[in-house]
Image (cartoon, rainbow, N blue to C red; front, side):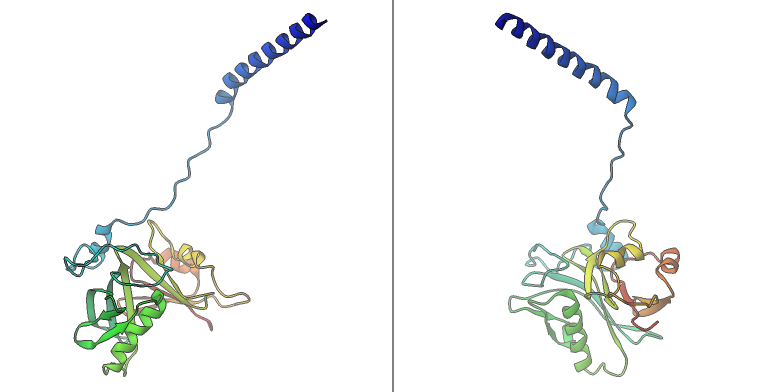
Length: 232
């Protein structure tokens, strides 16, 4: 009885092995291969330099400027170096500042003769407002001040604010569309019925009636400010 049982088990195992071999031969030829899905890639460091001709290729204030890890949704600290431009006015904007500046150990960001902004421990939206306040206190308070942060530690970024869940900066990735940028932040606030929004570049504001219209006519680049209108 034991011999018969062993023979039956051996026959069953042999059948399974043969079946597996046949399946391996059949499946590769009959099953279509799934396409590989690639993740969006970030621009190279040289991309930032090309967007702002005449400036350094790297976000470095000098030889003593360290390389510091940066998260666009994190806070600023010592060594974080910011590439920015500041504009005054919106109809005929005038650039009043341009530079690459490093956050000091005490959390301050020097802005030349204009003054010093305290940005240590702040997220980028709050840091941009702190920088704008410095320019207003310096006497630039008759026209609107626009702070366009282009990159931090060689990471190109754009800003989103207005009718959003929370104002924030996000990294610019290759072939990004306006709709993708808004989607990354979570879109408009719950219950919002508005569709219009503005995009600021070099201090100039451009109005769009919908995301679809912007996708056809606008390619986001580092420094852009996307403001979702809460009224239109």
